[in-house]
Length: 163
Length: 63
Image (cartoon, each protein chain N blue to C red):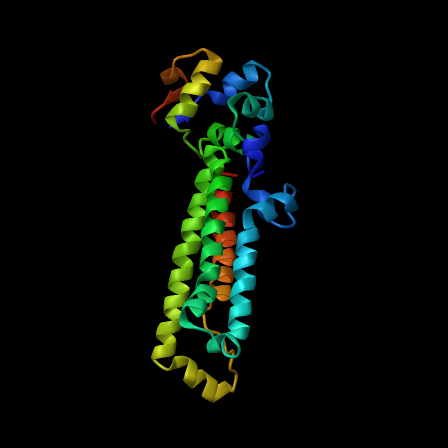
C-alpha cells in the first residue's frame, strides 16, 4: 500500500510533500507524514491530560501514555526512510542532507534555548518585557515543528545547489 | 568532473526527460549532471555508458 516507487516504478520526489509545489500530493504527504501527525496528537493529548486525569493512573500506564508518541515517531521515521528509498540518487542526496540539517539545527535550537533558560536570560527578558511565551522547546510538538521548519529550510538550500 | 552527456543526448535528439526515463532518474538529475553540478554514482555512470555504448572514460573525464 505504501509508496509510489514500489507500486508503479514512479520515482518519489521531495516536492511531493511540499504544500503548494507543482508535484505536491496529499496522498503521498499523508502516507509519509501521518505518523508524525499521530505523534503530535498523542503528545498534545498527554500534555493536556497528564496534569489531571493521567497523573492518578498507575506508573506503568503513565509510562505507556508518555511513550506512545515516541512509538509513533519510530513509525514516522520508517515511513520517511521508505519514501527516501524510492527517490533517485540526486533527490535522495538532497533529502538526506536536509534531514541531517534539520536534526542538527533542532538539536542546536533546543540546546541553546535551554542554556539561555538555565542562565536566566529568558527570565530577565520577561522581567523587562512582561512577555512570557510559556514555551518549552523540549516539548515534542515543538521539536517536531522545528524539525519540519528546518527540513524545508535545508531542502530549499540544498535543492538550489543542483538547480 | 567534466562530461559529454549533453552532446551525446542532443546527438540522439532526446530531451532531458527522455534520457531521464531511460536512466530511471529524474530530469533534475540529468540536468545537474549535464551542467556539471552533480557527479553521478558509479552505477549510474555505468548505466549512461551502456546506454550510449561508449566507454565510461570517454563520457566522464577528470578536470
